[in-house]
Length: 555
Image (spheres, rainbow, N blue to C red):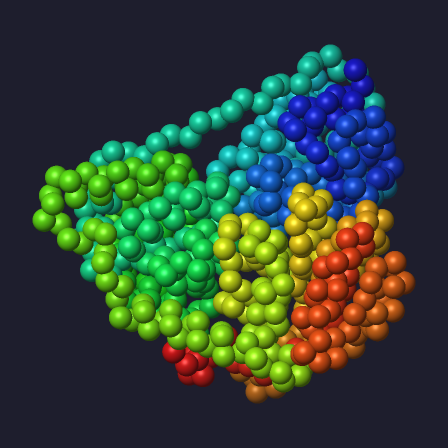
């Protein structure tokens, strides 16, 4: 069998459905082999867009998203999307072509050391030099990408290797069962929880990745312990739960920060430290931390677990609940489980957060306020519809205001934090979930970073909505410059006519002229099923100060 055919057979064997990318000269054999496969190839207009699509696919499916580029500039164009996936723990395989292997030791056309380049932004990568090794290399790549904590991997296929023959069959994937929690550590955790005065449950990205939501919801409901989540843990516990304090992650002006600062015990479940630094909530090193995750905690001054439970999150949560139930049965005098009374501070926070958000329900000012924009979008979408946020001030507003009821329905990149993610990510989301409404929320700077993928969305006849928050400024950078230096520089730009822009690609464009018409345009956009819709709306960012300045944050 030709090596490139074998490579594709191995991908089929792993259950790959789509490959996002761009053909090139040095990956031509692979592309020809792919053309004979049941795997669908999605031609993108830039390799960064392909990587972001593979990233979003990995987040939404739990499978490995695959992206393809040729050597040299094709490979370098993948880098940002691959790094984004890796730091956000998204399962991704990047495949790059390469010149003939006998030329790699010297300067040759477009040749550069892609293996070294991808090494710091992947969990593992390799260059294939023997076609007989392809089944092992592909299987290893998928196994590593899927292992907790998941991330990106990279395989390079030189064009001369792709043309050779191989007679080794693909290696069948084997299901891996994760271990349960240590019994003694479960008992220690339960004892600490029972002795706690003000415990909180702190939920992160790991809770979304492995579908632990229903187990965590049971823990919250049966114990009565208040929960909160990071940006990437939205939806693990529904924002409608009376025991949920919504999202934490903005250092100074953060209602949930007040709650976690008042806690004596923090049950951190599936939290990557990159999501929200413990220095922000444990600066006095006075919290008893129970660490529950698939992997041991990082060594960090401000994160010192007294109990470190390394196991499948679902197993650990269920084991803690069982132990608490046992303690209650054995010691009926215990009246601390479940917690019967929500602390007054927590009640105050939840009440004022809801009141503050709801106070914008009838706001008619234009340009539209961020709170009102998000309320209108939330009202237009169902519980299982998907919103993808780009990076910028709007990301912070979405994290705080957008009510989320199910995991993986509000996707916020918050590790590598790359602008330009949301629009190509929405393409992948619509491919994965064609039955759902998909909305990309972008700033006017981030949207234009991958505008070329609008042609991809039109060609694929994908009906989803992109809302472009317009202020003609790199808003967060501008605000931070003003806070530190008293002025902003080099952040202003102009925008195209978004209606003409959309129509020139074959999409549909709207420019909102008043706050009152925004919900009507959203409904009109939802009815368009066979092409993407761009909605541009001017946003009043004057309230951004409440995101970062606690002296102006009223709670």
